[in-house]
Length: 283
Image (cartoon, rainbow, N blue to C red; front, side, top):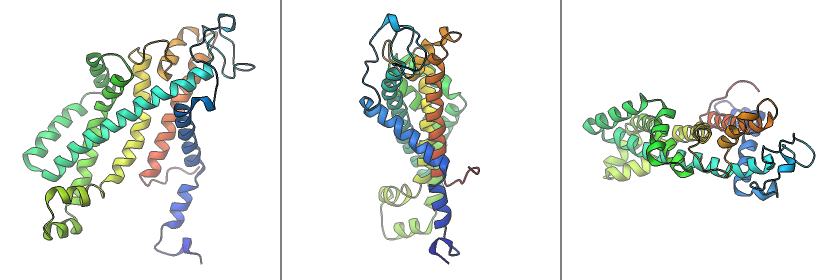
């Protein structure tokens, strides 16, 4: 009998989860996307803004692995360079949701009483508004651009993080080790920072990974509608929008960027399930 098979230990299950092919592929997709955002030169040496009318609407293959667009620009280069603004906006949106929503949820769950009621009623109002509609309203007020799009999507993430953090804080604050810390004279801020929040972070991290995928979709949707970076700067959502007039004769203009967005969103969802400790379906 090995250590992994000893009763009462979950090392075998944890090892199997780590080695699941679906999780490994998802991690690889996110790693490739991150490398494309940080080091685009690893994937292509072409200028994403270089126009070549003689090469317009070339299909994938040959000198252009993913084809060219209606102005002859290389699609691989535009997709690779579009990873940085798309993923940066999604990351900012997740950070805004974690920081603002986590802070509101922590204060609400730890203080309780009137503070809890006030914060949660505001969160309930935001939850009643569809996330994309809320983001669209905010980006209209803030103005166009990658950062404004990220802030708008991030504000839409706040209610979910607030609810999850509040739930976890309520669960942890009644634990024996928290009561012990209070009995030893630890202040409320110390108890919250050193004992409550570290033990409430698990579901919040899982939600952050899940929100990365949904934020990529939301950022791409707003970019598709024209609220992202101004042309000719490439973003995944704007690439899909620019190719919609050529679906019949140049399918790759919309299909390939759309598949890229879908793969990143699905990969983030799979990693979120692993962080949440769910085994998922057999793979």
